[in-house]
Amino acid sequence: MRPATGRKGRIRFPGRAVNFELVATGAGLVCGYVGVSGLGVTTIFHARFSFRWNSIFRQAVDPKVGDGCNHFCQSPPDQKLHRAEYMPTMKACAQAAKWQQSLGIMEWIPVQDASICNAAMNACARGHQWTHAVQLLGNFPSSLQPDVVTFNSCIHACEKGSQWQAACSLFETLQFQSYQPTVVTYSSLVSACAAGEQWQQALELFRDSQVLALQANVILYSAAVSACEKGAQWQEALGTLSDASRQGLKLDVIIGSAAVSACAKAGEWEYARLLLLELREASTANRVTYNAVLSACEKGEQWQMILAILEEMVQLTTLPDSFSYSASISGCGRCEQWQVAVDLLRVAHSMKSLNVIAYSAAVSACEKAKEWQQALALFEEARVQSIEADVVLLSAAISACEKGEKWWLALELFDSSQANLITYSAAISACEKGGQWQKVLQLLLQMPGAEIRANTITYNAAISSCREEGQWQRAFLLLEELKWRQLEFDLVSCYAVLAVCQAAAAWAAALQLLAILQKASLGPDVPCIASAFQACVAAKRVPESVVFASRLEAQGLRALAVS
Image 1 (tube, helix red, strand yellow):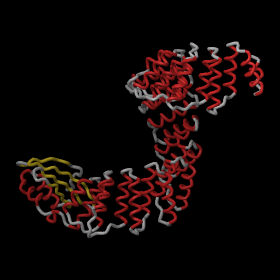
Image 2 (cartoon, helix red, strand yellow; image 1 turned 120 degrees about the horizontal axis):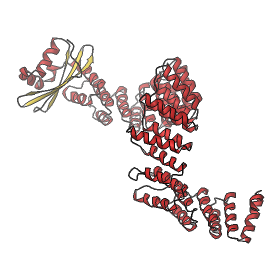
Image 3 (cartoon, one colour; image 1 turned 180 degrees about the vertical axis):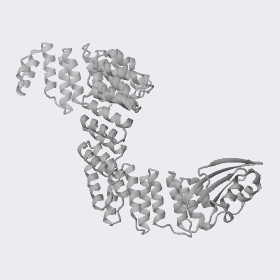
């Protein structure tokens, strides 16, 4: 009778207990692990589905034959496991990612060749234990010589552990020892570098493999296309994909999805769509592929194409998930189709594919369309649905209050415990639009205590808030603080200060700022000169007004100069 693999248990004996687990090895074999407390050992057994399996397993777990279990656990390994069965057992450990058991087995059996170490490294790779794999290579038996498979196994472990530097170091060692790298070597290396955002090095290694005229495989090409995707090199990705086709390699879902994602990141929705059609014809398109195309259409602001793709997914029974709807809602919001975005949110709700990202996209769509009431209604709906608001959703709701000039609602939504730069900036902007300069300064003063560093945009909003009460001195102080904090000092900042000076008829301050601009090689440009001119006119400074009027006339703005 075939035993149920994956079975685990704990049997107590007088003064000790046995933990066991079964793992299938294939070909009618079972690998078992038995740990006996009190003995400080972990033993293994490997049996066929027959009398031998029944007798050994019964000895291991049957309380009636506890003495047999003790004898089994303490007996020499050769009595339990034939040497010819070491490798199937090790392979079973690798397939099940049982790296601890694999390393334990190596302590019990004589290591006769490199294949046993290679199998242990594969188990470590599947278990994402790259350090143990490297240690195995470093402690390789002196009587044995590691081969290229050994290095490949270790490099693969480093790839799974996201250690591209270690993988490249092992590759250099392999070459130094005059081993010939294989396509497996390059596949793991390219994948490791791609996962580590080292797309340039990944592509360089891929090209090296082509120079060596190695027998290409889909894994290597998929890794290369993934590297292109990481670096947003969509043209390189399409070129690599074409090369794979010329090599006679079948376009599978992995390499196809990677190429689609590369186009999506670059906003090349037309190419992404064409690739999707090819994948669909080859019956290799899946939800991941469709989602990548939806993401491309979102970036390309193609809301009608988004709706067509969603309909296609439903027809092909590749049902959209929460990512599909979130990307689609966001794409409609970018195209100012807030009603469509809300409708999609309702569809997602009926399909039980709602999450905070979908709500954030819908609220943001309404905010961009200045539909602040609808935005706040959706925000409240998310709360009712027990969807915890994240920073993006909260910021979108606060920005909606800004668009509706409801600064007090923005402050009600603002939660300092959840706040970050985005929410602070949104709240400050809402108060600035509402002419609440005191509230703006209060929020700005809170930020250092919350360990949040204001940026130039935040300071510009704070400076603009001073215009309402003609607080030009405070505006200048904020500008100086911006420079003191070594933030970017741009023309937008100067426009904000000059607007305050103009409103307060602070002509001397306006002239001072123009001098600062001249010194910083930022201008002044026409809007700055116009603001200074208006400040001089408001202060009835005739000589200065005449000078600025002539400068504006020279720029072809006579109408503004005589106003």
